Length: 120
Image 1 (cartoon, rainbow, N blue to C red):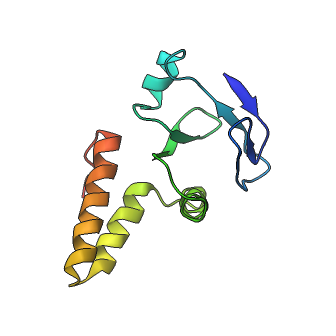
Image 2: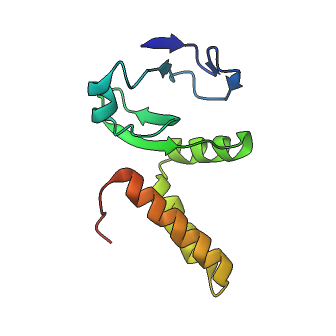
């Protein structure tokens, strides 16, 4: 486990803005299988947002460009999970078939990554 300072994922060339209380840790899931299992890391990259008590808030799985990452990271910190964002996108899709297809795909992807079915 390697600690990287707030706002900089050391050695990755990536920078993001996060609250001062944020600590970024880089964990090799293959060397830390217990942590990987606990926080449901089964793809790379995975960013797990974890409360101080160790409970998982939500995860961002897969690559995102900087604007998308910043938007989704901020949304999670504001209390909107990836599931909530995906449902919101589906509701906003309206009658637009292309938007519905993308929103349903994204919702399915989020559910598959969580490996759980929420109560609807």
